[in-house]
Image (cartoon, rainbow, N blue to C red):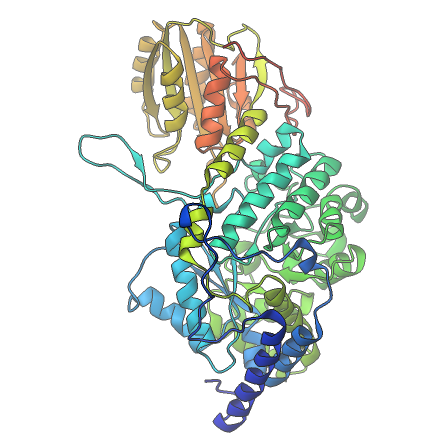
Length: 632
């Protein structure tokens, strides 16, 4: 119940919304109501349920029907101010299994049933549990008087497989997977293929699997131009450093994603690629002028807008040349979020803030300031405020003081409600779990992931001609990864063992001692070849893109054996840390598809055709890549 509205007007508001929902039902064939689920889907292959027809890509550009528009307008009119503001707030929910009375889920229920938030952002968990949790939350939302379904979003840059099911270790067995959705290669890997059609295929798979799990909005693609090798937060999340190429890849990804009826959100506006600070930890300052932004950073955002993308996400970065100071995040700057995005780029869709919990926006901006300022700047949706009630209260108070016009709130709400209509959140808020099992992680999806991954593998150095391995007898395979990355390199080593005569494998971590490394080097020196796979990645403020100095020195010394092949899984720029390595192959990421592709390339079981979409001065240039045919 809203504290800003007595019971009797609220009851009339609920009745008005119900009438609007009834009108919309006539147009959509279904209406969001608490007791109902979607009707059984037609049987698919083998009797499995199939996904309902997706909204077409044109759903994001067409005009709403008269019934749909009437529902939007009645909803806006009937909601009290506080609920209108709350509909603009999206909260973070972990996709793990919890009991209904677990404190974490009780808090989620309170957000939906008491605060009346408009959406949730789903995070890690198995696909089935994510979908089941989404269904539970949707039923809670539909049980409220307004009966407005939630907008469900997720950060799925590499696909629904980002919700990895995890691993477990049974007695007397090796590591086994607890199950996962499809894991697509990273954007930079897709950029290395040089094929826009691969970006479209990846977008389509991500959209199809997201929709099966009840996710309406995907925070992808990353369209940042990664032209700074020291960027700690974008890196392989970008398609590359060339604005035109990134624009082409982005537009194709959007076409694939939204063709499956899932809204895409390009990020991080107006461009997070030329930074050397992680905005999860501090506020990056970009000194570029407007002309530079227009010719580089904004090019992919314009392409995404022209491709009809439904959403854009702000960047927590400071742009002194545009907004006049080095302390205001772009998220809170009207000159950026309205002046650049709305007026210059001509984007008319839904604007999402990046997470409001990040320090890039939080330093110097308590929630009572950041939430109202974000709305004033031109954002429609406030993502993950640290305190929902305080955030909503702050925006309502700003309206009361005349700092934000009620019409400004209503304009954002109309865009959000229209997006709920366009994505099917209103007509089909409940997903069929059997249809999910028939869709998520489908063999055809994994086959596409493997094909794209194989095309992405890039050989940047091979001065001694060590690739392919050919008839090499004994191989020492070393995987370097942080302790938290238990499965990194497993698929790579497994594929090597399947194709080579003798493989002796081991793992090292940042904590490996110099003495242990020296002992390992002595053992490896007796092998015919030494293959070292390094794994580093960006990870929301705590990623390790650099490798510890003593590990670097050890790898560099191994190069003197003339037997060393380094495979960089993740950050492609790490070669600057061991410059004497003569054979250097990159995959731009981790995951079963990329790791197996790299091993097959090293073994000569697959051709090598990737070309680097980025530059590292002194080591390689954009477009570099030695080509190799399959030897087996």
